[in-house]
Image (cartoon, rainbow, N blue to C red):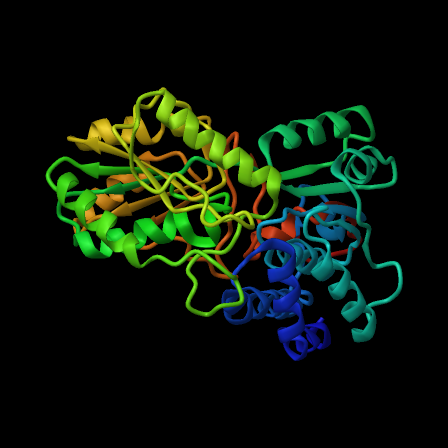
Length: 414
């Protein structure tokens, strides 16, 4: 695994190029963040591989017990198209450390880096048959993995709709364990004691990063009424310098959406927002005549029952809403079927503690957003799924626990 991480570093340029060509992600982000992050993930779990151990139990009577943590077996990983490299190793690295063999099914939109990683794994000395990449569509290749009687577990990141299908396939086949990281409609809450300029930077990062194609996107932004007007004025002004264009241009802030289907879906949601009575503050149109580029879009006067406030859009579309009290905004933040993430912007520690404990979500960011670390587990509540990626917690879904009990003869103590 350490050799594989070194090879990823050596081929950083090629991998970053492939990622941009496949997905429209910014090349300089891939080179500085995603590809090094993939290598770091492999190193992190390589360090954990020899630290997996069970427990010793003192049984009643003349017996002793201990537990073994054994590899769960053959794992099927189904990864999304928005962060192909990061998600590949968020799943593959802990499964390798746990001693599993695996089949990775990358998204049909972005298979290139997965195939490249399989080649590097072979070069690194990972035995044939341990790490396998099979390309194909979800309805065929993905469905075959989920229903196969010899696949022992499935780890999936993607839509809630497909997550349901995977659970059904597990139930109909061999009851294989399933871990799901699904959709989100995450709230970002900005209180009136916040630094407005900092809050604007965080809000833009939360929704426009990776052209909004990120499951933890802070797409519902709640701003306290005391700073609401100032926030609207300043965020509108700040987007005048936002550059949408070629992902290989280092001056660009936002590349194209992943494909025509996603491009058209986002534009349709923008039309829903207009139809339902939200006010289009800025953006809302394609950029240029060629490619799948969309302007960063902000709606105000958004009501909780509007489609753009309920559905995961997976694009650069922010819904701005006003609030007055802590109680009100907690209720509104939790008024969603999802529970993946949330952000809180405040200088009041009491507010930060109260709100972070009140929101039903798997990860809460205070005065920041989209901050991940190899050591911090990541996953959702409610219909955002279950199971955790990242951190030592991720190892658990690739292990199963066995209890061994033996008699003790002639021991001087029990």
